[in-house]
Image (cartoon, rainbow, N blue to C red; front, side):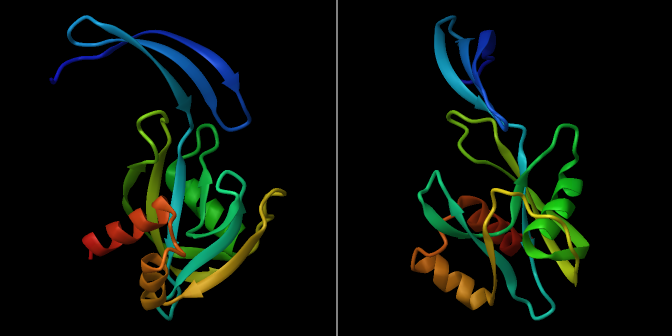
Length: 176
């Protein structure tokens, strides 16, 4: 049932530091209308940093929404007007303590398109050098350099279950 859908009404019902929740009314191609609540997010980046030994620089951080520590690649939210690569260059330093001289765009993924506009821009970064930037006050991060074999094992045993991390790894494999 291909056709044009049209947004006919929207109202912000919650605005936070990072996102807005919006009530929306849509018109379907057949003329029917329906309502949805959409989480409007500015977008984000995720970086797959590869060190000189071919290891992935993963981070372990507590994620309140998951109520658990997650093993994942560095990532962050786009600031207003910020380009994805500029955000990625900022976030890799903040979260790993390294800057990268070489970058490759791996792709883009929507996190949950059924209710959320967040699109994550995926990058591979290598030729790393130590760098310093202030970490965000609410981030508690541990760095973990992992071989690709260990990364695959961590995915297989459920220790890596983060979608952006798994997507970036898959994109890297596809683009080899």
